[in-house]
Length: 615
Image 1 (cartoon, rainbow, N blue to C red):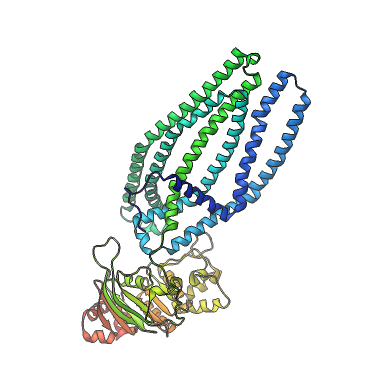
Image 2: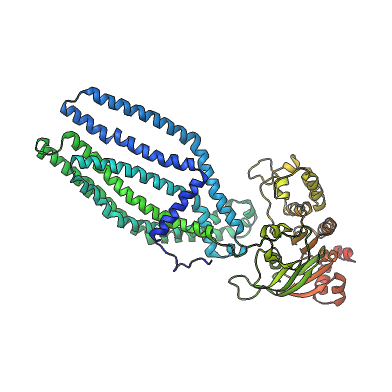
């Protein structure tokens, strides 16, 4: 499924799709918390009835009763009964809003977040590199929960308005049927209200990417990861220039849509305030003072009720139209949410289980090109990754090493060729099980603001894990640093949420990320430059430990320092998306080709350190 282009994107959805999107929001809330939705909407009905009985109807009865000489006891009884019902009802609702509602509302938020996060974890990596899809993804994350709640709020308002409209219209019809004409006039204003909502949606959609750009620039000024670059050279001036450009873009958007919204709003206000309310007021005063109740005109109590009720009816009709317009607006925003949630990931797994001990992986004719690129990143890659074999993947930047690792993990699917595991295409295996059979560390690894234990295991802890973690930290070289932490394995990394947390250097972070491999029991290991922040000696020691700890496992590691390639069973050198050379370190050195030349150049740069290591 490809995202729609701007020309294809509809600014107005069909009535069926509008209803479907709003029902989708209500269904989601209902599935998360039926109690919350039922009480929230039911309270609107209750409040609407009580408001009518305690305002318009009560006022008419009191004034007309006094004017007609009615016994005061009947009026008092009505007020006492109504007051008792209101006291009990409002107490029950207050308790619900303050004790139950916050919990139920959080359940709705958690349900919506789970829907979005599950889908975000399933969509293929290429979606994050597609600006159109990523824009919808961000909109879905920004709008989903708040927009679903707004659908409920709009329906809540709709119910309250319908009750007030029905009750007050019935009362006015009893007083004088001609008054209904004044109340119906706001219906004619619905067309302008719909145009105003379309203009608002257009403006909000254009503001989203501008706001994201501005937020990114602001982030660079206060987040620690940018602190050094911001203080070197003129980086801050460049970013301030970008921030000024976002303000200019924002002004252009306001100028493009603001005038339309102002005109539509003006027509709406004039129609409601001047034609409806003032017109009905003049008619009621004329009927009471010039005609009189004795000649079929209004009583004083009726006139007073009309002055209040006609405004209520006009307000309700205006808001009914506004409510329906809001449903249309909600549907437009929810379209992005549903597009994201309904998206069918291009990379789907099969049903086969991965052999627990791994197996032989064969790569045949593998060709791959990134979307939007004019040339292949990988071309006709062929090799066999034998069970238990340790392969060093080397080559210059841009030669395709990391892309090959991503294809082995099925983060992408090849454009041509295939990858098989024990003779079966990897498409046949369960995606979660297949990826779960790899222990992976990327060059751009991330540590989370969680405990050391959580950062290494990346799963809930089980009995016996601590011994495994201590061994993994020793193998990765991070044990001494963690031993100095006051809370040991329970120490939180970073101080973002814990002032007793620990901040690690890049090299220390890398050692900790490598501990994930040593603590894992996967049959396959993929390491994409896992030691780029370590010095040559520390890196060689780490690789020695890794080779010992991963004995019997299948390992592919990428490293720009070729000294580590000596420890591999086989070296694959890539160049321009192809395999340039393949063999053991000794075979390639004897061949005296590109690998040998690169190895000797690096050896000369390390003051003899790698020369002594590699003989």
